[in-house]
Length: 269
Image 1 (spheres, rainbow, N blue to C red):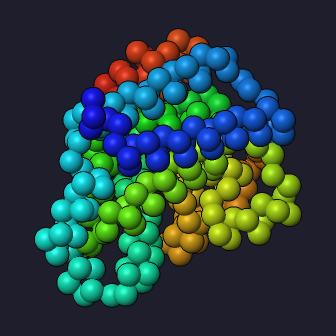
Image 2: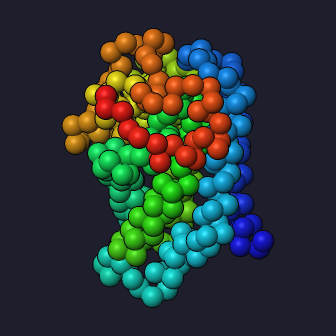
């Protein structure tokens, strides 16, 4: 049990719970869209699978993440340890490299059919709110952890940089999946620095051409740089349909059915 409650885990858990409470309160006070699906069922299932992912990663891969970054730092492994830039520059470079990696990973999971089967469960949510930000299949969470671990060893990411990135990633995932109404004039400027809910909601459209846009989680720059940015959904945020062509029933919102979704056939859009 000690490995489950490391300082790293406690910091990340406190940050996550605090922001989840803020987002849930904001969604209740200033909702962007009305809910189409049962809210209680969705939140229980989405938070349930988020909890399952934490347990799988903590017990299955206790030495990955910050522990692996500490080992790479001590042994001098990775590009940044070889170059040995100033600490502040290495820290910033690590955050940018990890964020770009996650962007490419996200895009790959959309375009590779077997990986899409895993990632599709995230998109099959019939609404879009903060709980969607933790709705990832455990197999996808494991693959993502392995990819980030390879990046730690390749780039020589420091423990502090990795921990900071993970806190930012989980926080922005809650924020940019939230159902909070942000005034258009504020959103226009805010999305120059961070992925906003209106920007990322386009990515959860049932329309295939919109689903393959706006892959960013933290920084909005990669989509603009690589030509996958879309400003607004064609149908508008209130009218757009969220989800996938499959899994449109209330039963599909149950946790047990969500875990089986990668093994169900794919409809062509």
